[in-house]
Length: 178
Image (cartoon, rainbow, N blue to C red; front, side, top):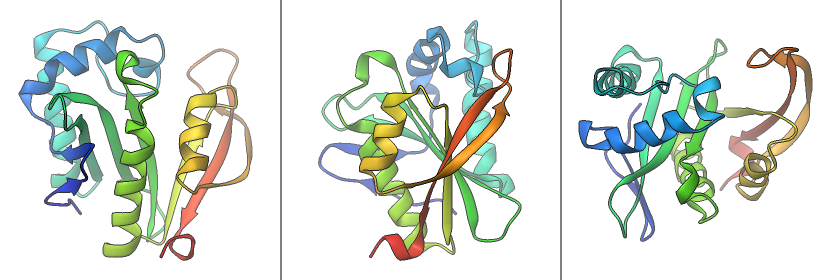
């Protein structure tokens, strides 16, 4: 389940490479990204390379896909978008992040749209779920503008902080896109 190429005139989603270590290092300095991902913090080249290899391994193992988000103007990685299989057949979980200096340029929204439409229209995916903390306004905006629907609140779901925090559950299903 990995697209050979996915993109448009603004962004390209591609396989991670060792050339993306700068993006991973920057993500590791973010106060939030490392708390809910496998991004190494503190960063080292060894840990950065291990991160890249984990992303490659997701497709190889059938766990899902993890792609680097690149801005076509700059050509460098700005973030990550991934789809990971859930226990139910045809259901995947969506994850994404953009490094701070590259946020608010539509990269996350466009990446989410491209990958989710590809999965729903060309792969045997029927439902995509995204979980987000209620105070993460930017991520909520990405999901809503990409066509996701709020389904509910999972109380005390995330364990990134103490005490546990709630999660908003958003979904996009095959009948939502054409």
